[in-house]
Structure formats: C-alpha cells, structure tokens
Image (cartoon, rainbow, N blue to C red; front, side):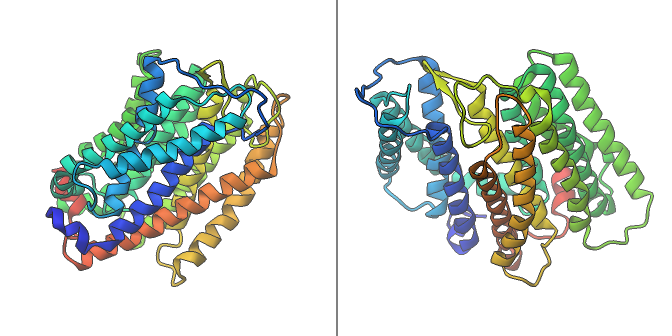
Amino acid sequence: MLASDAEAVPGLSSISSLLLVYVLGLAALATLAPFDFVRTPHPDFDLDVGASDVALNLGLLLPSGFLFRVARRGRGERHCLDVFVLGACVSLVLEGLQFFLPGRCPSPVDVLCNGLGAWGGAYLHSLLGPWIDRQLHRQLLLELPLTNVAYLSIPLLWLGAFAHPQHAQHVLALPIGAALAVVGAALYRHRAAPAGVPMTRAALGAAAAFAAGVLPGMPQHPLLGAAEVALVYAGTYALCWLGVRRPIADRRFEVATARRVLPLLLLYVALLGGYPWRSFQLLHPVTLGPVIVVHQGVLRTQVLALLESVAAFSLIGYVAAQLHARSRGGSLEVVARVTALGLPAAATFQWLCGAHADAHASVPGALLLGLAAAIGAGLHRAQLALSAQRRSSACVPDSGVYARALR
C-alpha cells in the first residue's frame, strides 16, 4: 500500500478520528480528575522541572499528534508546526483548569512539553506513516478485528502493572491471558491451520502479546511473569491442538470467539472492582470511583486505576460489538445494544468498588464506564467498516492474511 492509498480508504480517517477523541478524553481524565473544582484564593504556577514530569508530559499528547495526522490522511503543515500549536492549545486549556483544582498548579513547562509531544507524534507519522502502511499493516493483522483484542489488552495490562501491588498484577493478568489464548487459537484454527502453519507460531503470537503487556511488572517478579507467559503459550497451543482435531463447522467463528472472551473480561472487571487490593488511600471522597489523586507532584495509583477501568470497559464494548458484527442494524443500533450491556456491568462494578470502606459507588462513575463501553463498540464498528473497504479495494486480500503473516 502506497502512502497515497490512505486517501483512497476514508474509513481509516474515521477510526483515527474516533481514536483521537478517545485518547484526548483519557488525557483529560489523567489531568483533571477527580474534577472537584473549587475557586482557588491564591492561584500559582509550578515552575519546577523534573525529568519524570517532562517525560510524562511529552508522552501525554504524542499519540494524539500521530492520530491527528492519520485522521487528516497525512495532510497538514510540512514541519508539523500546526500540530504543535494545537497540542499547546489543548494543554493550555487543561492546565488552566488546574487553577480550580486543590493542590494542583498549572505549569508553563507542561504546556511546552505537551505541545512538543503532539509535534513529535505528528512528525513520527510523517516519517513512519508510509512505511507502516506498506510493511506493518499486513504483519500486524490489523484487518482482522479479533486481533485488535490483543492490541487493546496490552495497554490494559500496562496500566494494571503500575496501578496495583505486585501480587494483584499477576492475578488480574490471568483472565486477560486466557482471553488472548482463546483468540489466538480461534484465529489459528480458522485462518492458519488450513494453510498448514505450525501451531507453535500461533502460540508464540499470543504469548508475545501477553509478554508485551506484563513487561512493566517483570523486573519485580521475573520468574512469575515468565511462568505466566509460558502458561499462555501452553494454553494457546493446547486450544489449537484441540481445535484442529474437530471439524470446522462454524463460519461465524468471530462471534463464537467473542462469546468465549466476553465472560473472561467480565471476570477481570469483577476482580478489579471487588478484590481487597482496591483499598487505596484516597485523600478525600470522590465522585468517579477509582480516580486520579495528585499530591505534591506525585502521581498516585488512582490515576492508573481510573484509566485501567476505562480501558477495561472499552475492551468489553469492543468484544461485545463483535457479537453483533453481522447484524443488519446500523452502527448506532449496535452501539446502543452494547451500551445497554455496559451500563449494568458498570453499575455492578461501581457497587463492588463501593463495598470498600474508603470508596463509594457513584452514578457519574457508572455513566463514565458505560460511555467507555460505547466508545469501544464504536471503535469495533469503525474497524469493521475499514476492513470491508480495504477488502473491496483489494488493498489487503482477505483470504490467507493470517496464514501468510505467521510464515
């Protein structure tokens, strides 16, 4: 696929725009929660510069800059200065709102770093965008919606690795590892096995995705992390072996796979909300369940807990939308159905969170997570439309893509 082909596939712009809104929403949550805005009598600026703060602020809007250029199909100012200005303006709004958050001080350095991060993402697209389209698109199997379950699981595992105690990280990772094994085995059975691809390739793919997710927690318990990766490999291989011994009867295997994966994700959020490790030390009662608490410049685990919850429900929404992949209803109808599932799940999650002494359930928290599920469903519908457009335009052939990538 040539660089100019992006203009021939408008669906890429649609899904990138939706991802851009999603990423900017996460940035706002990470910056402004718990949203307890009050009038500050003596507003002040924070002029301290720390290496960790600079790194975090550079990375905060970097994905947004990249997605902005993808959404515009690569069009824009040659040196990406327009993205720098837009990123700085977004940061200026977010930093300005911090005048009304207790214990928070806006920083001009943060505005500059956020702008530079957005510029870096846009410049990265100008350098790598055509190469990604030509080389990585097929290798990453972006045409198959089920493979995106693995890609969405990786940041979820990252957040869990930083948000929870070490023992909790490994327990929470198990349902995600099982989901990756189910997806990897299903793709192998229905895409790669007929082409004679070895089972070890599929097992390695699922184990590699899981390893990428648990990598941040590996230094603390390398042996335990390696054992979990090996367990995912063995589980995927066993499911592949059992699957190929049965006749392939279901043509709609994606829906059947989603039915198996969805309970595992619901188990994940049940553990996330109900297990004792949710007893965080909040500085004060809040209205969004697990939230961000920033105190004296230290980013505590609540910021990651909030983002982890949002990411989990986005993944649930994505998988739930796969159940309606062949529905004759439009995208709005599918998103509405997924939201109808996501809201009770989010309310239950909030109820589990509220069972702890230092947290409480909240309607805004449930609505936020229900919205995350709806966004996940929207991402799936956009991905489905993009895949159909690429197949119809012969950008990426549908048959044998997974088998050729594994070889």
